[in-house]
Image 1 (cartoon, rainbow, N blue to C red):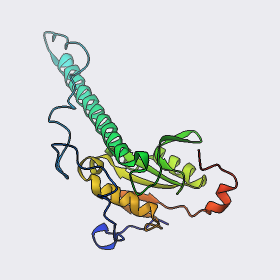
Image 2 (cartoon, helix red, strand yellow):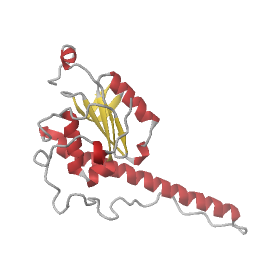
Image 3 (cartoon, helix red, strand yellow):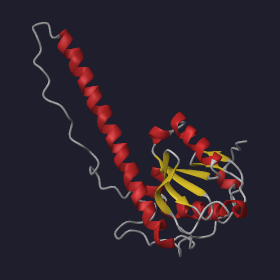
Image 4 (cartoon, helix red, strand yellow):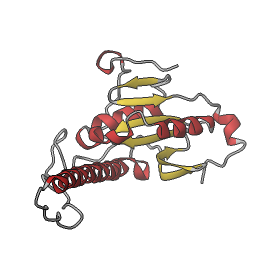
Length: 209
């Protein structure tokens, strides 16, 4: 069952995580865009557009399509780079038990899939998605498989990680502390909850690895 709620009114109170997280990056205020202007713009690929023939019709169509393809490629690369930067930034907050003392593993293998971040102690997977992942059937298959293995999945937008780092960490901490214990699907996050007994798991899995 998936429950849609308004986070402003219904989200459980979140404990401040500022003491458990790194301070804002030097020169960057919380809530400000950290990507330097133009840093993610990439030069177009491919060669020059062929000269037009006497009528110019066929060449004009090909030129329009070529420009459209270049623009699409640039946008896709920009989104991928922003997603990678968001994951790197979030890892700075999660590594070395910096968030509430919980241990996270990066790129953790679960069957044929790799989770962005996983806390095996709490059986929680944290995924950072770009907008190209919105309502992705592949991500739904990943979620179904990981849930079948006993993991809860928290999906966050890379945009929120880049601009609202403290709030993101507070949400992760609330999930780890058990303050989110039901399915949630709202505009800025998606949480798929799995109830599983750690006692029965620990008899089969070494969590100390």
